[in-house]
Image (cartoon, rainbow, N blue to C red; front, side, top):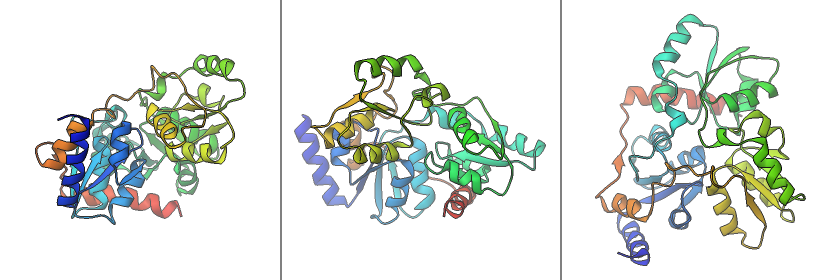
Length: 305
């Protein structure tokens, strides 16, 4: 089938089956156009709760797990089973268990970009947008932040009253950014603002006009409608913004670096296979494990109020 035939058949099968398509903002443009909901990982999981019985996740594995944790009765299908997040798997559950045994007075704070097994070991989860607030509200004054050392150091700087332990985890995409990348693009576009994700290294974050999560960067661009903006995150955000605001001037920082191959696995063929029942992977989590993982998410919601 050609592109148009794939799109028409996906739309037809969506109508026939009642399946809903969730797409992370980093997905390719053709997937974003077919999605019922587009957003960051936690927004997708929240929105899925009010959808039908079957949801197809166009993203990476931990995102599909998040949907299943919050919507256990739904059929959750990961469109591309090979799509994972390297950062989510950099720290093992066994490492955390050993750390907790040696340091029982330290709260375990897990970034949402972690496996379900790691969430089981955590005291609380955080998103990149809620991490500072939640770490301020955690009762403990000692926190192990996993797995992203860049986001962890950003939070630690914002919450100096607490002591943070970090591990050597990072997003392999954002971690490639350098100050030179920023300065070179700033020379070309001296009037442009610079918005960056806190998964970037601290020396890059220090050059930003705005630091925030995917949704925060998009909101920042909306609020600065008359300004040129350099986008310091995965190229999916740039693609989304240029599709939505074709007359605006956005500049992708280090475009050769800011491509997550895992997020690009889900093309039209993979989505068609998943919605046709010929591909994808149905996500299953044992109920006892799901409830343990959900506790850390419930704590995130409590502390984030």
